[in-house]
Length: 400
Ligand code: PLP
Image 1: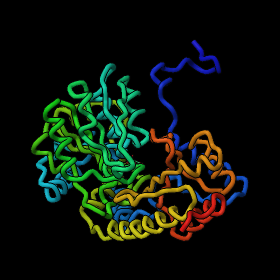
Image 2 (image 1 turned 180 degrees about the horizontal axis):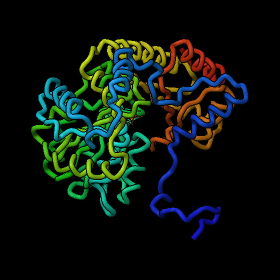
Image 3 (image 1 turned 90 degrees about the vertical axis):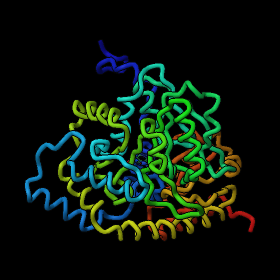
Image 4 (image 1 turned 45 degrees about the vertical axis):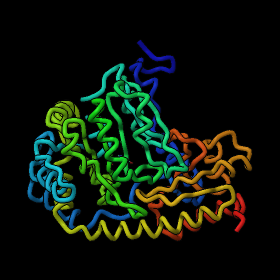
């Protein structure tokens, strides 16, 4: 049978799923650039730093040493041990190497876990603003995302109390601290409340901590690993080498959790990618075992840029930007500016900024929160200032 537009008929479950909106922005920015426009691109969610030299060297060495064959589905044991050791040393969590799996990036690991956990009829809580792939992965499993809202006035911190109306009916809760796109960090007492909720209701906590290396304060970062002893069978933690070590292209992510769940996700992986590249695993091992200096350097640079971009955005008329404690994004409220330009929604507003100022951003609709724009500050400070300067020229200056 063929689809109306030609080609084969597609699986029905894909009808509810959309292509990543961040990718759509990247494509539009590229089209403008191809026409010769100097686009300042605040869209991409990836570090502008190179992978540190000692990590690249480990990858090169792996090729020279013929580490170019299949590995264990969940990754080489040294890497899994090193990951478990880090969580033991930092958070006192007692996961062992058989409770760790690696995969082709955090996104892949999250998807494998979703495949292992969710089935049609399941309800999975997600807080908006959310990372774009959370609801789509849930839908791809035929389950239903239940979208709750983190509030701007509360620094976009997700609150466990908002789960109460759904207590006993949730298969899982997906959390992301530091958050893409809001930069919010869940404080220790709230982490505890989520753990208590999971313990009481049976919901599984999936904690995506991809940006854990990038927290600048105010406040401190607390991993859900700190609650591992309390909710051992209800907690799975996901992380990635992509952002921490500027290794997006190497595709290494990982999960730590109960053995039965890790084994199930591993089973899915064994019929999917098999494992992430052996060369990338060797590089990742060098990343965990080696010096963490480059991570600290990147963090300090992001912190400086965060302060620069927040101050600059608050000079634009109709923009209101909080200081996010983590990740490398800011998420200003732009409703006043949107109204002044007579835009029907933030999708239209973002399009106009792209076309009239050559500035690419991601509209809040992509994250379930219209009225906001996501700016990545993983670009050099002069470009940040030039880009926000263009917006100030287009939209006017805020009253001092
Ligand atoms: N989780 C969050 C919140 C992210 O922002 C991203 C990437 O943008 C990922 C997971 C996945 O990253 P990767 O698949 O490169 O590890």
